[in-house]
Length: 337
Ligand SMILES: Nc1ncnc2c1ncn2[C@@H]1O[C@H](COP(=O)(O)OP(=O)(O)O)[C@@H](O)[C@H]1O
Ligand SMILES: [Mg+2]
View 1: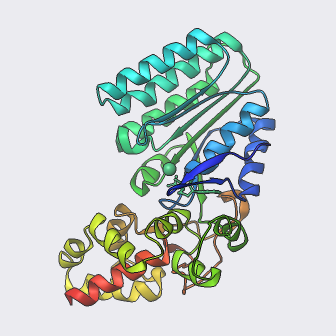
View 2: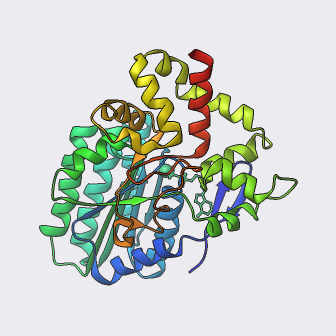
């Protein structure tokens, strides 16, 4: 399989590692997906990169592939029926012009339906960051519609693969309530995999161990540090501003502040009656994720995080998306207490 090139800050780098994640796609090639595979993981952990590499893999294996990411306005139409492709691109362009991003998700669905009808072959529909634009309630309906493609297709087909990825914790719980989806979690990169990424970065850089401790293997954090010439302070400010951390901390009750302070050392504290409302807010802010306590590989895309690594902010049930978020919160608490 050809490894794709990806934009990374001002660079182009090769897709690194994620071998088991790609193996999972190969399993789907052999068996199809049932039900819809919904992949949830920290912001910037590499879901989009993996999906784009999967588009390449599926294409090489003879699939017609539709990929849409309405949030990034990124779409791919890897299929051979020319007028269908033209229609797809035209409709998507029109939606972007009207800023009707949610429509793109449904266009992808319609085109997949037409593709199955026309080819009766191997079709993959991959939707990335769709739930964010269509909203929580409609997300469940959308997943149901994708399941219908598998269960009640317009024609017999050889194989259908449907994958949806999201960083939205709230859509995850809504979708998880139904039998329409199989929920999988993706974590940041493993130390070895992350090293392959780190080594591709040219120029002077801090040592790998230091970078690992700051990022916890989150490629977006690495990309941002590289963009900011390794200025950690600048990135902490960016995160604090983007997530409105000062307002968030100021809005907390004294007891929530106490729980949050404890959660900096052990995020599993949040998994308690007093902690759960706070946990939900931290999930909404995309600072932590709630993870399956079982590290069985079939529940994960690629390697699960370690059972517990408190230095990196990983608990059994709850994990900080990157140690740097934990640090940003720590500083905001210290500033405001
Ligand atoms: N396995 C990988 N190899 C190379 N670059 C990667 C890899 N995973 C992520 N990246 C890069 O890291 C950044 C963040 O990853 P992205 O896929 O956008 O995360 P997500 O979709 O989970 O938010 C992007 O620039 C992406 O290209
Ligand atoms: Mg993404």
